[in-house]
Amino acid sequence: MLEVRDLGVSIAAVQILRGVSLAVPDQAMIGLIGRNGAGKTTLMKTLMGLHRAASGSVQFDGRDLLAQPTHARVRLGIGYMPEDRRLIPDLTVEENVLVPAWAAGLADARERLERVYGLIPEMRAFAPRKGLALSGGQQKLAALARALIAGTRLLVLDEPFEGVAPALAQRLAEVIANLKREGMSVLLSESDLQHSERLVDRVVVIDRGAIAS
Image (spheres, rainbow, N blue to C red):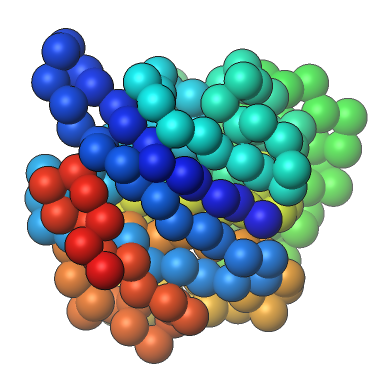
């Protein structure tokens, strides 16, 4: 489904990614593992159109993903969960979750929201609360719910377990495990395999901006 070939990315004249290649097959979960600063977030932001690639290619379901505008990824069925959650303080949880659907003008936003509530039932209870009224782990769940509004085919999850209490990390792991049963493809990053070892089909190790194994 997703194929990255020889991807190079530089930020402020500093080369961050060097010839990165990886694939996420249909209905597979791939773990991108690397220490802080290894290039995981840069790779994911480049996939989402937030950084410009200097070289290489990214194909999603046969399309040149790098040629697509950032907002088009929602219509392609790609959802993104950033490491820092990025909830909008003045919006309720439900409004935060719906932001990608509104931004892309999706006519089936309500149907997508009901699907998300089915996958993460606690989101319905959190819906009227302000996003920043939630705990850190609950905010991670809200960020995952927002990614699911867009991500009907592929989810790009950047450090979903980072800074989350053990009980909520376990809940996040349960939700992510269920996504594969729903037929989703997932690219998930972590600094180690503490939470994702039993979730992923394959591990890709990134170090100093290059794939190590």
